[in-house]
Length: 342
Ligand SMILES: Cc1cc2nc3c(=O)[nH]c(=O)nc-3n(C[C@H](O)[C@H](O)[C@H](O)COP(=O)(O)OP(=O)(O)OC[C@H]3O[C@@H](n4cnc5c(N)ncnc54)[C@H](O)[C@@H]3O)c2cc1C
Image (cartoon, rainbow, N blue to C red):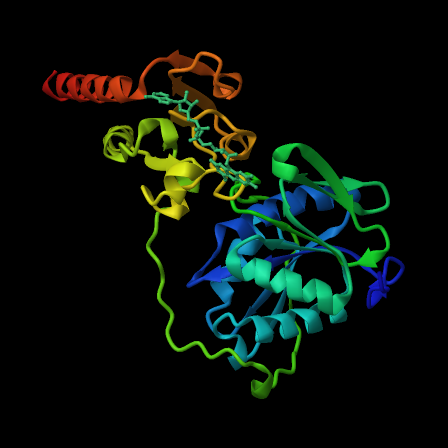
């Protein structure tokens, strides 16, 4: 592989996190990465920086990043950075990175984050470990990204020993969000000027429509339906509603159009961190269970006592979910009536 544009000897002892915005707030995955970045930076005594690109109302975003642990924010402001376009953002991020030379650069594995990270890695001629399920620091400031491969059969630990920055993307929900810092610490904002040429930005943002799809990653209760529930997501919705939760699904019902894709849990879906996950009619394939491995409690309902899901579950019910879920709904409704009338 070609040498990177700067090497380990020139790299600064800084972990930099790309701060992705969503209107007037930072995307949760950016805050999760700052939380993890803080932990990693503290291990080796490095600084944690946030990279913020944009054109307006940047101050509140900086506040959020400082609260979660950033020591400094590198800001590049330009009219062409008002909304995300991969050409402008790659060029600006590249210029800032070449100016500050961080040892590590982390990005959320969101659609824009993935687009940006891939192009940046090529431009910087460095390595990118995509979709990490964990990040660790080794001696000498070597970042190790944990990645699953071959359908979960292989757990690979990937490092980039020579090239800088060491780059990784991580999906939303993989790292917990740490509580805001209360101690007084020094906070620095550095404005870095970037040169952008409109002619190089081929993407024109005509309109921005914010999708209001479900975000099951933040729900305290997730009721997941697998192939075994035979499309009866109406039942799971009722149960989820009674428990104040959301409905999730394994891949087969999503692929067959029974439920929206943003509700798919697992390797190619989302990672949830609910207090309780109730998994109905799912066998427990590894590609699915990685999406609920951070749940506090997993309850599984499956007709097959040998189903692998029972190895992951804290509580298991061997039985027909299509009978058990309606019974649960009825019991909950009755208990609510009893509570309100009592
Ligand atoms: C690269 C790759 C990525 C993938 N990513 C994902 C992913 O992100 N998420 C995901 O979910 N999958 C993913 N998959 C697919 C995954 O390997 C499994 O095929 C999938 O999770 C199986 O879904 P399931 O458990 O719903 O179906 P099945 O494996 O068919 O299991 C159905 C289960 O329902 C039980 N059952 C049947 N009837 C009832 C009933 N009435 N009541 C209770 N139980 C009943 C059966 O005993 C069985 O255990 C991926 C696969 C690959 C190769």
